[in-house]
Image (cartoon, rainbow, N blue to C red; front, side, top):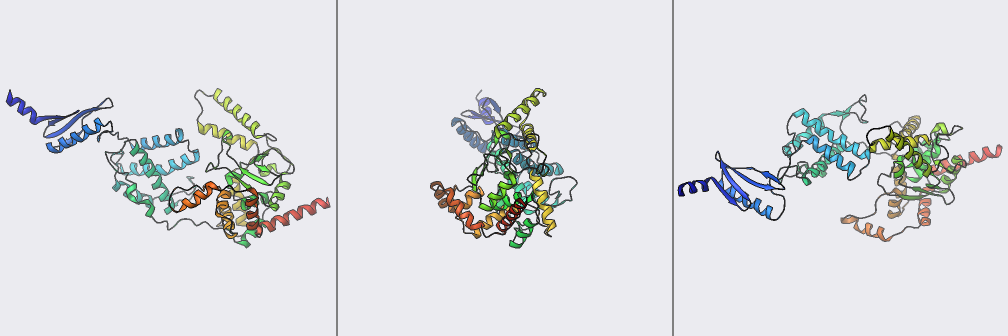
Length: 464
């Protein structure tokens, strides 16, 4: 009996809630956690097995996750859960989610091509390094269209893809989908040190190019591009301006506001107000011709006589029409409509109100730059860069610059802390903002062109 007991002690042991068993010269640990029976394989060394058992027992007693309590999942399932987290929990914009999906789809394609490391627990730093080499070897369509001419990924694009993959694996770490104490494989790449050598440069107009560009505009294009140059609006912000709340022609103030009830929000969610310098203020008055509701900037086909289907509606009335269309869609559908479907309906409201599309702004911008011999200027966002550059040249106060651009002035850490705390205690008066903006922009060619256009309109009115 004693011999049997001695033999059993050599084949098994117990430390608190953990039992060790020797099977085929390999030690296994057995314990229960969160209602699940776990039986990890440790190895042939009994002393190491006892140390691991003691460690797990201490973690169980402290009610923390044990070292072996993790759930590896496939990387394509990780992508699904991560994107769903952004959709349902963080409520990221659909455009952001689409960018994240496109970026991490490269990782899914890499894994499929190598036919290895399909699980989160299998993906190591060596695989992440191989993925970087893979990204440098493939060609993609810059605009995502399958028929577009393909080119290698630029360094900036590669870096963005890797940053998205790192964020996705951070999500996996927090939900214990990686092996115990495993490091995020993309964190080991030290992404911040990857140089960006072949990124597409952002170019802005010089004075002569700015003058040539605006002189090439017709009467419909000029107010639109003047506003972008003299306010620094993003194209998406410009096409979602509504009368009367977003443009006060009595005080000459422009307001950039979120409109979640109409399916649109500012990129940073930060609302702001921008004073209009006098020439732009006068140009917008003439452009609107007394209109007091609807989109500020309408499609070209509505600039003469035609009126959009939802002409003359206030923002509240547009919201009501949107809700009616959503209800009608839900009544004709067996399943609740998704957020993407709701936003598609909202885009229909903007279209029927006559609002421009951001793609139309880019098309018109490229048409004008080709006309003046600058075909390499293809991004209307460069006009926002031009506005920021003009503020810098005009010595506009940094806090006012941040407010006009819609950038955050709140500090997080380090050197920016002083500016952030100053911003917290500073409340810029509209007249101060207008004074600095007038001083910075009054010497710009855009103002000269605006005045000439106004003079031409005044002469025409006088002749009539």
